[in-house]
Length: 157
Image 1 (spheres, rainbow, N blue to C red):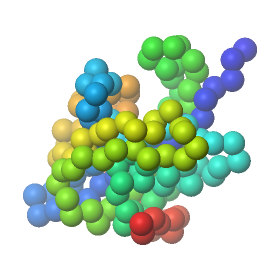
Image 2 (cartoon, rainbow, N blue to C red):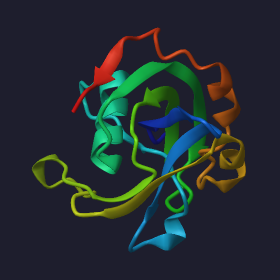
Image 3 (cartoon, rainbow, N blue to C red):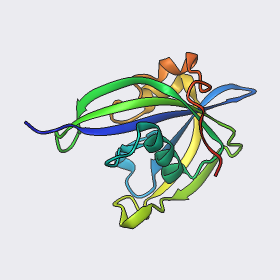
């Protein structure tokens, strides 16, 4: 039996005059990866909340994020390798004012994501469920009632 890889994914939202928006990104050099939210594996000994905040920072460069409680867990195989995965989805709020920007991943110790280039941007949250790749849109509807004040975890850059 193969052990499941534990991951996190984060719905980072903001409120603007036009409504609620979700932070997403596209891989500049791998468009086939589709539009995604910050997500990735949990390191040994790392808390899920720490991994969620790390992934937001690594993949988008966004600071000023208040992390809420976990919303749901998803169990599904990796779409290419078939490796079992369990992904815990979180809600977060941001004060990010940029509408779009380019971000290059600079992660620790030669991580495999180091150097990846992303185009980060916000979309209306009501468009997200059908747009997100790899089943990441499954729990977007739960963000309508997300309460980021419950955990008190923040990244202020």
